[in-house]
Length: 299
Ligand SMILES: Nc1ncnc2c1ncn2[C@@H]1O[C@H](COP(=O)(O)OP(=O)(O)O)[C@@H](O)[C@H]1O
Ligand SMILES: [Mg+2]
Image (cartoon, rainbow, N blue to C red; front, side, top):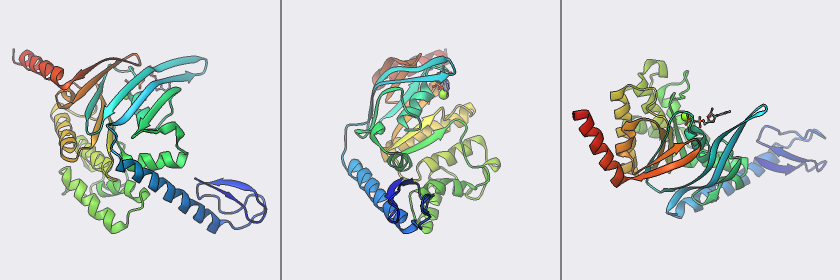
């Protein structure tokens, strides 16, 4: 978003590039809008570049995060004070029963919704301090999102779905096509570039969604129940792929889930209940549990 002042009548206007004529005096503001937006984009780009150059130990921090949904007269507390530090490169699972607040936490960390109180920091940047434009920039460049229902655009091919976020990041079309193909190959769909979502299985659609999440080389992948709509074998494949990406590229993975298969790839598991962290398990404790699960399955 850019703020400009009409050079004819001095009216102050906020614009997303949609308004190019002064609503008061009708002056053509196209050049002014373009210049103002160029400055905003340059500022945002610099901000993100500076931030990614620094390597804070914790890529995500939340402090006293609460969220209350208002449903008419009724207030639904979905998060009740969440303090969580997530390390760069970590594979973190947020586990909890349905309704415990996983998606709400996911939306706060991903900057998709605002907390009622408390703060969320991405690379030490307080999301609440960003302008709408800066937030949109951060969401586009730093975070890749994966959802239970894949959320692909049905009329677009796999390749078009994957390259879409690159358009917003301002990549050239040659670059986009090359990177899109490379990403679809990476997730094992090099031979499905021109298939539309309905021509793909659930697991394949989720692979396209993973490739799309990687479009702009994010430092964080947020996955909300990524295996929720998949059968056991396909779910395991998707988890393995996410783990591979995590180990191979160092991308931080934060996955909300109630799928126990997620446990053994996780560096930590955060158990959440009624909007609060109940306990956090580390790798060593998880291994013991996976061992026990294995014994139970065998016995
Ligand atoms: N948009 C919303 N409006 C009102 N209540 C909501 C909304 N989203 C979630 N909730 C409520 O907040 C609580 C946490 O929901 P959610 O974060 O979706 O849990 P989970 O993802 O763990 O299943 C639930 O009680 C749910 O009903
Ligand atoms: Mg949910």
